[in-house]
Image (cartoon, rainbow, N blue to C red; front, side, top):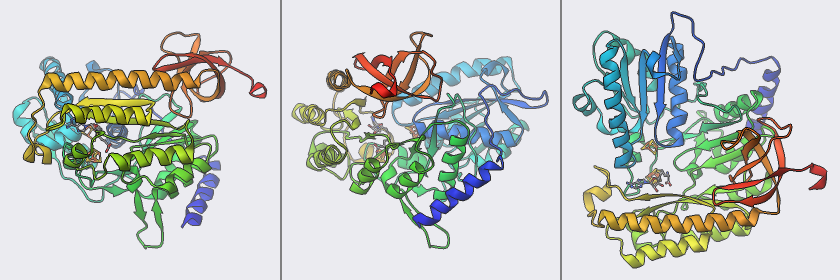
Length: 481
Ligand code: SAH
Ligand code: SF4
Ligand code: F3S
């Protein structure tokens, strides 16, 4: 199998020389006058942002050009998230604002896409009267038809969840791109049933995308000047693709290797890893290839085994600790590790919260995404458990988790001071035009003096100082490294 994938790679590289057409469109596409304008706004996770690029491609074929201005849009899509109540609240507030806009411009259509659309389905049309189109994450191919219907005054809903759809054949249109880093969706849906999580209901069953189409997308991106790809899935370690004729089987470690082989100058990242599924094979593949970044996002959700069981995460504290130990043993202490953590899950006691803090100390995380538990209707936790930790306690525990992460991030960043890091330049620093910004292997943001470097270059940067969020330094000649 591996050989066949490598062959595909060679064939594609040959085809490349014959100048395959690659569409690269900015957010503000110069459109002929007869083209209609589409404005897309994305909420939620990277997968949603990646989906918006598929939607832009589908709509382009239906005659729409993208715009970065809602004021000139004929069609507005909100690609929504349902993960926590406040994510949905943001969308409702946004819809109120758009309602005012629509009153001024009655011909304009509004579509709600993504996870909140899937969760609420046709109810959306009753709740938010000005919404014209409701489309779930697996129905984006149907958008041109739904828009056409809406143009004749009918409301259009398609929230069908598929077992097969991966949009493998659609070339995404890169939106808001820095031209250097891009996301590639390698799978969709999720078969885990974490009791707090709405994703299995909004994104359906897990399915893996054709490996060849993933490698081709990585190759196209590299050819187009991109220097980093992030392979995306809710649980990338369970990626598993079998060809229609049953002769090829590709697991995540093998896919990772094949994407790494596209070019040593193409950095490869991936997200999200599930502690129950990440294998030594993946860790050794990371070790084998310099261009697979030394960084793992390994959500824990809690440091207490009883809570992990209630969450149905299928591992306990000891298992998680063993995974951290394996990562450090195979990839070394410098491997960047980040986490997701939830405070105040159903029945969590003060001691159990302390277990989360001690796990964080043990793992010495570089970074974290931290949330207060938000009950989601229809999830196993909402049906079977009581959301009984008072809001103020959830918030206080969350602030303790965040404060500890700040301390750990600073400590981990301090270890990077005095060392030279290979940085992929992503653009000008937000702080100053005289400085550039990029990331090192461990996904840490590095800011350094501009000199003659440009976006997409690799720079060797001596880090001289840091904050909890950023490494700061100046470029050095490779010979002095
Ligand atoms: N597939 C990824 C996570 C996807 S959702 C994984 O398994 O790790 C991103 C994060 O949102 C989760 O890791 C979790 O920390 C958080 N989250 C999900 N549901 C939540 C809820 N109901 N309340 C608070 N945070 C939640
Ligand atoms: Fe949600 Fe769990 Fe699936 Fe992640 S693995 S998307 S937290 S159900
Ligand atoms: Fe949100 Fe859906 Fe992603 S619920 S976090 S946009 S998978």
